[in-house]
Image: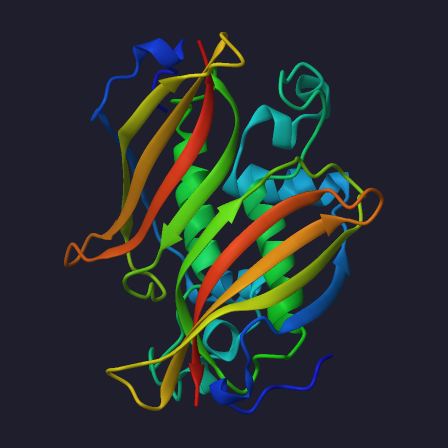
Length: 149
Length: 149
């Protein structure tokens, strides 16, 4: 667990955080995708071998997002200040395969006090998930958070 | 189930699709968020009452995304042509509360044959999730798909 920030005003531009690492095994990948992204290359290891872009089972990108936010929010860093969010823009530059270890980090990209709500600030965080084995980035997200001042 | 498209070339600019509807109950919202987005307003109905922007339990935006893609991919429309995707940009203009019915629709926003891979086309789809009761949009996504030609 990270110590929770107490206010939007404690954040500084470019500030960086590390949120630890995760991996997803084949059973988890299949179970998630059966519900939320049922495509052969996410749910059927045999069919996935014929997938032109992947050649094997890969995690749903939504599952990768969720695993990242599970770490980010589970870290407790934003526990006392997070009021919600409005937008996440996500890119998946490379596939995530079963049992790969992904480390999650974040950096403060923009900081803006809210005009309409003086007790609130708007923060864009840039998050990355990086494969430990070869430092390939498998997910990049820019997330707009509302944080308490 | 929708009939599967057979090729990228069957799609036309502005073409629209309907994927049906979903709702998330309180237990589902909590179970999802405990794993992938553990914040009080997603996992604790009592604590959520004090959440300044929501005043009650709301679904994790990632859960809303997943429920939409579960319908979109589960519909079978892209079953025979989907090779993967690279990017999703998501906005949540309004919160999603337990047991609200959300209808999911999509429209073709851009169509581009791939330069490097002649057997593939790049398609940006714009998806919306709309609350049936009052037509409020709770989620908007632009997703970049790779489709077989």
